Length: 202
Image (cartoon, rainbow, N blue to C red; front, side, top):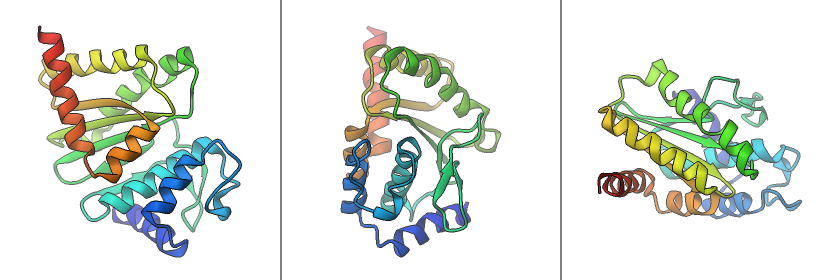
């Protein structure tokens, strides 16, 4: 795990990336203005994975290993998406596995088709993290449609009823960035789980 985290750390130091710069960069995805000129040629969907990995490393690098699954060059700059069957970004420690899936898909049906069942499958298919006692899943997209939100809420309830200790939440990008800057991601997903379970048990 350390070598992945180190690669992101070296990107952060070589390009002198601060929390402020990375938040501005995340805000600029989709426009032609990139606060970090050297990254402007990276396609937007990949840029989103890359920037979120950097933000997570800045905030959580001392507590977790951060392993983005995109393909990167020797410096650590990404050039291709995570191969099929793997999640986008693995964040983990001895007892926690947090999977972050990111997408720039805005189309409602497309999102429901590609970013729901596959995402849940990534959480389960990861044999490497099976033994972790706590599992978290964040889906991050520019906007989250109601039916996608509901899909994740049903999945959450189903897993909790089957005794799985899994916390799942779909986030619009700006809310995810804000929650990460406050370092409240895991608590936020746990609170969301309690809220959804209370709604379903009425």
